[in-house]
Image (cartoon, rainbow, N blue to C red; front, side):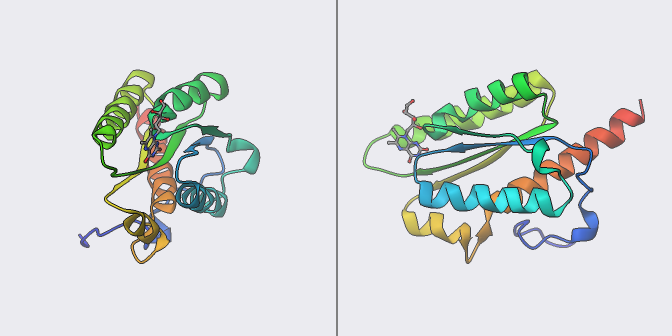
Length: 165
Ligand code: DLZ
């Protein structure tokens, strides 16, 4: 198997067609230069793989800490097959960074298991703005695109395994 560095350079033949899927995007408003670029990358990728625009509900939440709650609200009100959570937490002088990162990672994991639905962690946790820019369309790809690819793959898995039951 090829070595996985990131999914921005994915093989299109391995990505399920999204015509039957409903995939939401929740984006944090903190560091909008980064999160807007990631959300655009996610949206363009879902459309490229056949998800219909009307099947991509979008929501904005104030910060990454609120991503879990936003994703839960979207799941409960729109019955999405998957939700992509997009945020960017940049290390500051205080321990706020650690609390937010841990809360959102655990929150997304718990929500995904509780709702039995893929909730995708497209949250950058970087030391500085340059590392974030590098991952929002820069030299390390766009983690929003990778979130969309992950969501499509997980929806494909659900379809495959549920139809086997
Ligand atoms: C408060 C805060 C700080 C210091 N830094 C970030 C950040 O880098 N990225 C981000 O998405 N949000 C940050 N926030 C806001 C919190 O996520 C949250 O919105 C507030 O603590 C209110 O619950």
